Amino acid sequence: MTARDVLPILLFGAVAALLPVFVTAGTLLNFAIFTLILCLAAQGWNILGGFGGQYSFGHAAFFGTGAYATAVLQVRYGVNPYVTFLAGIALASVVGWVIGFLSFRSGLRGSYFALVTLAFAEVFRVLSNAVPFTGGAAGLLIPLNQRAANFQFESRGWFYLLVLALVVVALLLTRALERSRLGAQLVAVRENEDAARAVGVDALRVKLSAITLSAAMTGAAGGLYAQYFLYLDSTIAYGTWISVEALLAPIIGGAGTVFGPVIGAVILHTLAEATRMMVGRIPGIDLVIYGVLLILVVRFPPRNLLPWLRGRR
Amino acid sequence: MSFLQIRNVSMRFGGLMAVSDASFDVAEGSITGLIGPNGAGKTTLFAIVSGFQKPTSGQVLWRGAEITARPPHVLAAEGLSRTFQIVQPFAGLSVRENIAVGAFLRHRRRADAIALAEQVAEQVGLTAELDKPAAALTVSGRKRVELGKALATQPKLLLLDEVLAGLNPSEVRDIVPVVRAIRDSGVTVLMIEHVMQAVMNLCESVHVLAQGRIIASGTPAEVVATPAVVEAYLGHGAASRLSGGAHA
Image 1 (tube, rainbow over the protein chains, first blue to last red):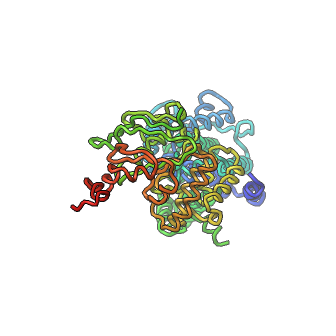
Image 2 (image 1 turned 60 degrees about the vertical axis):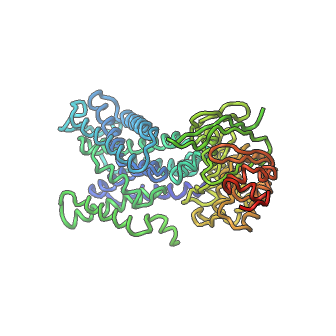
Image 3 (image 1 turned 90 degrees about the vertical axis):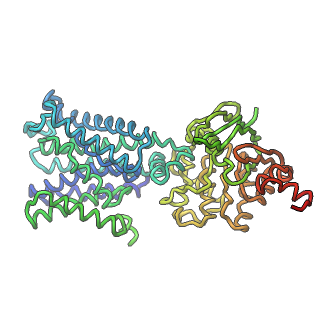
């Protein structure tokens, strides 16, 4: 990576870090934190779907695993939340690898892969709703204990900065991937898997690496979600809402680009929030907006904003 | 010990014998041609040698060791690289990036891979096209990309599946020296080709496949004079009519 690769990311981090200085309104920080968590989940999807062309419809499987691992281990076994957060990332990546191994080894591509990932996420959702271990249908409450050592902060600003730092790390990782051999091979697999194999790309290994990294990032987003909102149930952790948002954000912002998921996440949440403010809390109105947005983005090229903006310069 | 040996390879698709008991050798440092009418099984044989398909029976030996049905990426790492008859560019990527994917096989660092890609691009005459998306190239350009991608893996044996098909005569004239230069740089070439002008020009030895069987082997001049070959292309009895001047 060169300075030119890293600079925009650091610049973004520095500018975004100024937000808590100027904004103290809880709702706005709340919104910003939630959007950043989505950035992280979406960046995870982007690695597998955007760079690798493997469209997952079940990133909830990783988000939920990260979230539940973070919550369950501290609530049931009293493990320090920072440790459980890392355990959540590790567990999510294991789940990613296993799902990837099962589906990629059997040669599932395209919509078949999407359906299988959706099925996995749904199975996890149903299971986590049924077993008492995860709190079942009643959900799981992380006890309030606002100490920094406990991964809970009295001021939202600190949590915001922590999430932002992780988003910056994710952006740097994605940039490093983009510049690496693995990244080039991943893109080659996306463009033409047989041609990639012919020039020596081990497609299975490349896709497994991608889904593992992808799951880890989305799992981290899940862990942060649990730690911020301190409550989980099966529909939050493994619900389709996160699968949908994690794929919509990169597709709208620019799949296969480093900043695409960030731009998409901001657009997505801003629109959803603005609609809620204007029309009130109609259940599901955000999904309507997402649907309209998706149709517009798919129907009217430029398909994604970032290359378009770049082209205009 | 021969370089590449194909031993009694057969490939059956249901009731169809696409390749039937084919055997031949490719000598190190040669340009060997594989010709035959459409549907003879040439591309299937390539798919078997390059690991994309597992033969029903038979063996492929590479420098004395059996490599039958090893996956393509493993074979590429061992120095066997192929191009596709129907070009398979990474359409969304630039020419430079396309070739670099091949170069990454032996170069972990991006800068090294890109440098090699640019060097290969010069070799195949794509320097002016480096920044263009592969999808924007002409047929001739795409064939060159196909060649470049395979070359960038730094193979010892290059399998070329009709790199000249669909090119006009002047484009053919341009690529023939490129193929010869590749061989002169130490890469053995096995090529499927329909353009006989190029085959006669380039190949030291030629194997003719018809209906899945090897029906003739020899120098280009020898095989085109073989009656069985003429008949494979033109139909039964054609050879005697052509050579004997007999009237039908």
